[in-house]
Image (cartoon, rainbow, N blue to C red):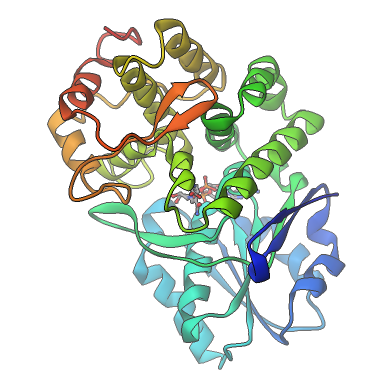
Length: 365
Ligand code: NAD
Ligand code: GLY
């Protein structure tokens, strides 16, 4: 088992990465300080892993809530179901919530924990690759709004993250690729040698080679933990984790939540960000081609949905947490392995990317 630490002073916490961790009772008892425990999961994950987890919680008073599965349920209404359960079962503020599932469950479970009686402890047990390498780490919690992705939320850190690589065996290939999009993101924004490693090992990752997957999870979590430790509430460098997200969130909102997986939308968004970075004079054609090639090799989409017209895209991008005084801000690449958040990007250039990139082929004219 690997143990990494997210360094946040008195709120520091470990990320455990390894095989078979779901059956490791000591990890749970080490981080659960209460008698009452609520496990939050969904209809897909519950039949797969809930019982395994419950077997390790026999000395606690455990309740469970099984939520509907899907990005379209990442709403305040669904989070209210968690509050209903906590209140109906008389949960005290010192109780512990365990989020068992992908990023949707982790974000909602964490948000419920942040709000319930102004804050209860919570543990993240991420069960998708995306959640293990990104969403479970760093304390961003929340829900979507019909007008914008992740618009309602709180920064609220878990007591620990337990990433059991074995649970990825049941993840389908499309979800695996969606997680790889966020893995590639780390290479692009700050880790050129990881990017090169990914170019060489993408086939092994898609084939679920255990050693390759373990390395990718660890390297991603190292990058994420460093960034979060430096800038917990995104006043600076943490924004670079949003590479591709301004475009990607517009795709998710514009197409209807759940139509494109988050990782898929981010993959397309990273291509658009690469195209825009080229227009800024930072990346060259070969860099953009290289980025598109790796995402394509990961079986990810790289072309934006043709239904989203440039004007609608722009309007959707105007609802983004990075925007300042109504001006759209986009994470770009100065080079592969180095991201930047320019104060202002000429909206004419953004429009050019929206009009040109992916319209006839992946060429960037
Ligand atoms: P998800 O939670 O919807 O999970 C994807 C699918 O896989 C779901 O159907 C889920 O039930 C299923 N699943 C989960 N674990 C499984 C397993 N082991 N075997 C089989 N099926 C399994 O999606 P996701 O990709 O995990 O997360 C995406 C969400 O995370 C988005 O809402 C996104 O906004 C959010 N996110 C948050 C952060 C953050 O920092 N908080 C970062 C990135 C993404
Ligand atoms: N996934 C973006 C962040 O954690 O900041």
